[in-house]
Length: 410
Image 1 (cartoon, one colour):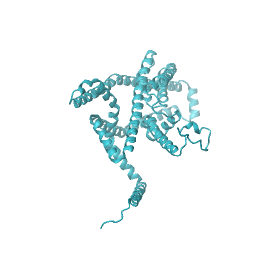
Image 2 (cartoon, one colour; image 1 turned 180 degrees about the vertical axis):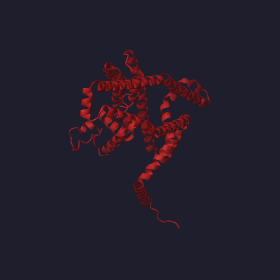
Image 3 (cartoon, helix red, strand yellow; image 1 turned 45 degrees about the horizontal axis):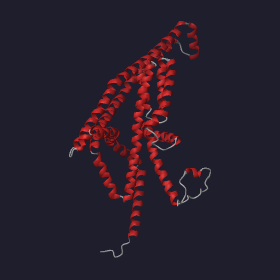
């Protein structure tokens, strides 16, 4: 049976209606089975963790690979048929370089961190023991002190001693109870390490075939979208890559410089626990805006435990270095890659940090910058369609009244 009258418009309307109904059914199903859907989504993310880690590693290593590919083995690529050899050599040198950097970090920095941490714990234990001895001597040296303690607390010295012994006994029981949690932590650590190792292997394949993958994505976009929309999608992808890449890699490099600078200055000033503090300052500096405060508080407290006077100098050094970073080093390395004001930076860090934790705080600024650009583009497109001005300055002091229409250029 053939349809004599085929109406494309009615068919499109019917198709859209079916799609809306199907989407509504899926939405209701998802709402009703929210718990099961959350578990399934969590399971899917757990399975995809190695792939996610692989993308992260490949994305962070890619600038090093590009530099080595374009500079170190430039002569190899000139010869016909040597492109694959050039890529393989660049890949090999890239991963050898990264492994050497990581190995040197563990060889040089980690032992100093362990030494600083051991010294800090010993200092805290010594303070606790000294305080305990002082209290015991104070209670045992004077009958008046014992009598006052008994009167105000309702306990005798022997009862206090018995209570302390019971606390110590229960502490051993608590340590035993914590053992299953320690086993779970070790198991989780092994799982994470396994995912990172698999991700490292995946990153090798991603870097080796990134040109082919990009070509396949572009081919798919051209096949599914109109030429103009495919071009805009390509421009948007380039903007996302530029924003994330320059911000994250620049922030990591900037934080490395700040960590080294902190180590040098604090070593000259003979600040205790310099390696530990330098790592804390360098790592927390990756977090925009709030990072310096997050790193300064534990650093000052660590020095305060050992040398209270040096804690003041530590705070001053951190403040000076952060000012240098904010006004000189940071702008030179990162520049204005986000294009958003300080207010939106703070709001984005608070929102994404609350949703995704530390990772959310790190990626908040470039991610919000992309969202901000999409919204700005949509708003300006609507204003241009209505013949209105797209300049924000034209709307200052206007309230909700319409500004003057944009004059057409002759």
